[in-house]
Image 1 (cartoon, one colour):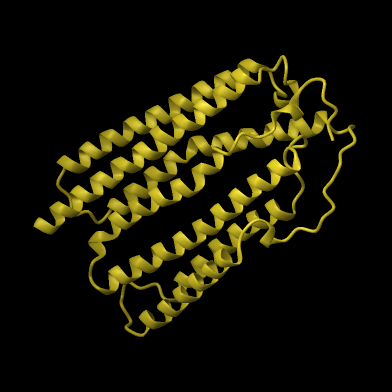
Image 2: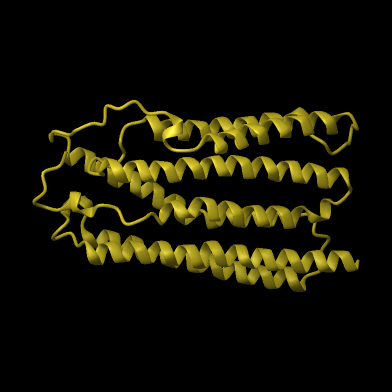
Length: 284
């Protein structure tokens, strides 16, 4: 019983950290950056950056802030409930995951809206002459052999772990389905990496240096997500083998913190070249 109490306290602390990091800290950094861009690079001087009326972006900023505030408040309420309401903790990892998915909803809306904005940019720029970088690209232009080596080693180590644990015939163990799941995740992420590295430029005005820097950040973030996800499942399998599944909620929360740190920094890049969006600049 005492172990469960301590486990619950650690889980509540990590859950509160998850709520604060994603829905408070990162959300405010993202919204501050968006508002600063609108202020420092107004539509009157940088019309190519705003294919829609300026008020639409202000409304979007307000809605993004409001939605994150509501989700953060929900996280505070849930933390209090987890602290005060007795329970076995068997579903805590699920609560953490569902809340994490809810926390990512505002960012998903942000991505969806950004894709529509870039599509409008391409439409307005359809008749302009553009220069293309004809140099061949490879994955190593955006990441390192070490990162790829760690990714492969982590995957192969996970496969070996599953094969080893399978011989004990634990009733809860999913066997080769674990390998299938991680493989499917890697293939899913690989599609995003391939499209980012070899696909067409999303922002028609973006200079090559900014595009390369942004792609490097995204590719390395996706590689890190794959490694983190594989390690998470491996740790949960090991915890199950040693009858320590009550720690699963803690590892799940910690995983969400890691994923948020890896992924949300993509939305906070270095200052790009906004001069390409000026009214009097001839676009490539």
